Length: 234
Ligand SMILES: Nc1nc2c(ncn2[C@@H]2O[C@H](COP(=O)(O)OP(=O)(O)O)[C@@H](O)[C@H]2O)c(=O)[nH]1
Ligand SMILES: [Mg+2]
Image (tube, rainbow, N blue to C red; front, side, top):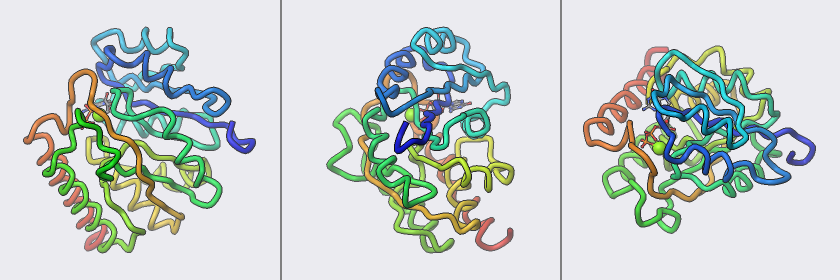
């Protein structure tokens, strides 16, 4: 609970057995987080069983994709404050407090992983990825009249239930370029948005999106296409 509001954490999970239990325990911040919901996206390993044993509620989403998993999570989570995160060791459980600190005044509180001081040595956030994230975030900021943004791909973010209700049916992306659409739709609904710096650590297990240059460029290109689509066509 946070100021009398129930808090849910949502993890999209595709073959995250190596770290899922530790992540569930890390994000079940005592007295703050009421529920950790793991959206198992057709994992072939023991992700679901490990998550359940660690104290999470698990739902299976059969439509494959990062966006599909997160959209399911937004529908299934029961909290008034919903926090999206990843169970791969890159995010730190205690950072939910930073998001919650702004939840009274904003509808959506997005983490940013491009703050130099909070990028850990093992993190996959070299200069190319960092500047790519900043540049696409700035396109979002300037083309769609957003607030100051410095990361287009940080899963760690909070959305209030009533704000989510206004955008969830409009979300269309099932793939890895899901996050900018959430911001674009929130801006169109005139929701109040802010970005706060969060820790970004090394990953445990295999990265499926930004682990390769090809995956990074593909996701980046799709994000830019989405931004131009909403700016000039939709
Ligand atoms: N790439 C990918 N990730 C998925 C899928 N379903 C759920 N996920 C989860 O989405 C998150 C992001 O993927 P990840 O491999 O960490 O990408 P990275 O953060 O760019 O290294 C992880 O928690 C995955 O387990 C899927 O179909 N594809
Ligand atoms: Mg990750």
